[in-house]
Image (cartoon, rainbow, N blue to C red; front, side, top):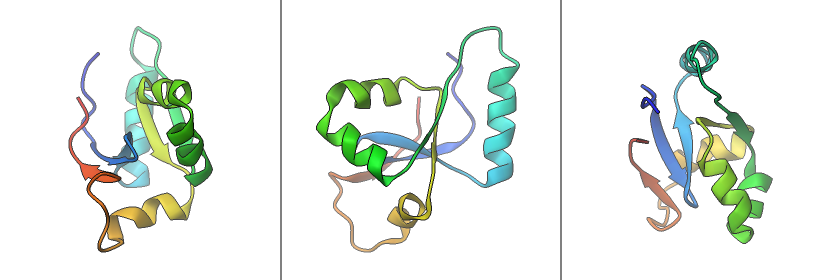
Length: 94
């Protein structure tokens, strides 16, 4: 699958898209125009906690084409200092 042009931030091993709303919408439109199945997940803090406790859920989320933060607490994580490297790591999603 082609790499998306947005950056991601892993929170407890889930790669969340880090971009403005317009860029996320652009990525969703690009995915919709592809000739293959894609999935976009909007995940909030509850979903992150559940995925942390249920590896099958985490695997399903990580297989999505795009994971978008749903709710302010997820968007606060990159601004919180200090944070544990094991919980949050910044890297581009393949």
